Length: 245
Ligand SMILES: CC(C)(COP(=O)(O)OP(=O)(O)OC[C@H]1O[C@@H](n2cnc3c(N)ncnc32)[C@H](O)[C@@H]1OP(=O)(O)O)[C@@H](O)C(=O)NCCC(=O)NCCS
Image (cartoon, rainbow, N blue to C red; front, side):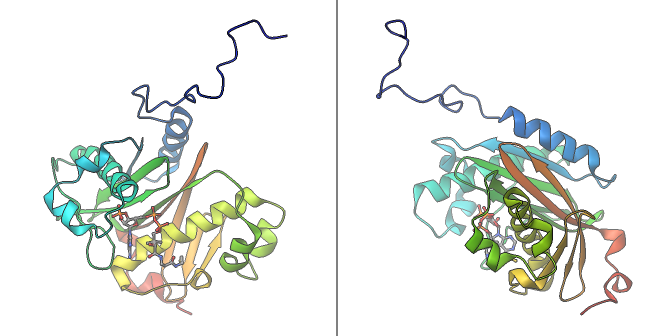
């Protein structure tokens, strides 16, 4: 029998790191540090932050105007993502810069920078780099939970299906990788891509788009999975896309 008073009861608040003022998921932070260690020397900065009430106030006027949704949770997550982005941009000497959304939905970065944002219900992530080093950059974050079978049907090509069969978490990585690739290449090509327009080699950590673009992939797996897709500026010449198909 439990000692009297040890049961918090049905109305006790769940353990909530944000309520306790903690804005970092320690396990995800470690995983992102490992991801950073695996990146080539391109100066790509990646960060995260737990979403908290009030983060919607972090949107500056231009950002606030650029986000069409009036749903507080949506604006809050976008605010958190921009708090992360501002921390990262400061590392490149860009302080207090706005990252409004463009009409396409893609974020507009200050001159000289390239980046990407993502958020789920709990956490926001961002990646930022110098444009002269990195030609394409995309990030996605997903809960580290199995991808439902019906979603996998939509996401995986014939070639990818055997790789993720019986591996629902690997299927989630596949999904995140394709979303990150889409965000990386949309600002370059302005093309809507279907999941089957992108082929991912999880083991080789690369992705190929039907228009011939090749991207490198890196992953962080903890409470969430984060996928990062990028192309080095040096690798983005026409020669690198000669295998378009
Ligand atoms: C871009 C997209 C993939 C984002 O996915 P999501 O699950 O809605 O949201 P995420 O949290 O992962 O990412 C949101 C961020 O993506 C970025 N984004 C939105 N549209 C973008 C685009 N066209 N290009 C690059 N980045 C974009 C924004 O920064 C946004 O954050 P913000 O609203 O705070 O500015 C989705 O909105 C979309 O446009 N999908 C259509 C294409 C598609 O899904 N094809 C299948 C995958 S290949």
